[in-house]
Picture 1: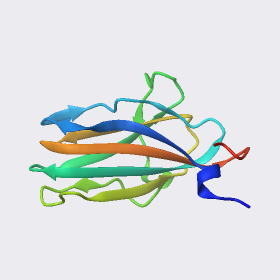
Picture 2: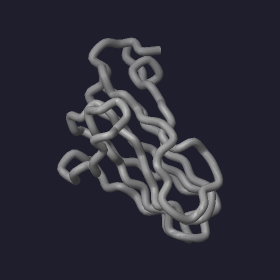
Picture 3: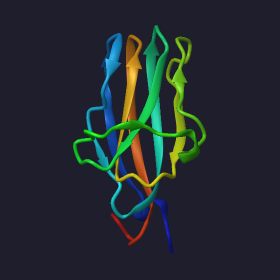
Length: 127
């Protein structure tokens, strides 16, 4: 029997925190080795300014080659938590071929986070 619990691995990219205005590079780079796709989960708490999220990809483990993901490699769209989107969850999926991912934001002021749920493992169970 397959279950999401045994076939998915969650990782943070932006740790839950009060974010200040300005660019915010994700806190963690996620290695997708062994997984076919990734579900990106972004969330807001109370925010006062728009909080757009952007997925970055690359093949360098430090993401020295980081580039914005092309829309063709996404199912859904990268969300912008708008100033009236308090306590919201947004999702989209990455189906590209790069090994490393990170979520960045040009944060508005308020609470936010981003997580990457690695799914469709080549070898299961993962947990």
